[in-house]
Length: 252
Image (cartoon, rainbow, N blue to C red; front, side):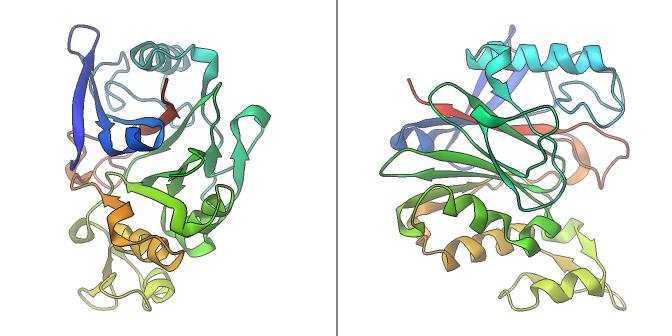
């Protein structure tokens, strides 16, 4: 993963990749991996999602371990009900029933999105240090969730974006109804067998960010992929499976 330093917690069991570049803009952010939790297979071991069939007690313990590693009180580490939409929520206003696929943080709350092949994004306003995390699968990308989250932070040219680990174009086969939504994005759709295509979610994400006014220097793409589900959970590799997280908080 480019510009990422591995951190460890709990005697080296819990691995987090810190997005180093983000700290230049007043935000610290990390991507969790599979190791360091208490969940049993098929959710082994640091599953952070409560909606995939894992034992709720295990999920709670995993989230507590993550919060401890990040030096955040567990009650101030915010997750949200993700629905593959384009809604944007603010951490301070969340309830147990809030549905959203982008979360805006602030001085008092760390925010997280959960993924297992979809694209996790970090957006930071380089001038104000406002920040958000985004869950972007093909549905969210088609609906414009990145643009909605960016609008909550300020003008595109002032933003920095990190596009995190997701499924590779080689491993992500889609049908014509999905491919047609992104045929205008250069290089995003690659012909496969019959009417199948391969879709590059990160290429779509980068294209949408550039369309918003972000230049190449301020869009950072992770080189890591979820293919195979070994380092990160992958829904395409195994069902059911857990979810890993992209987490962000204000730098102290």
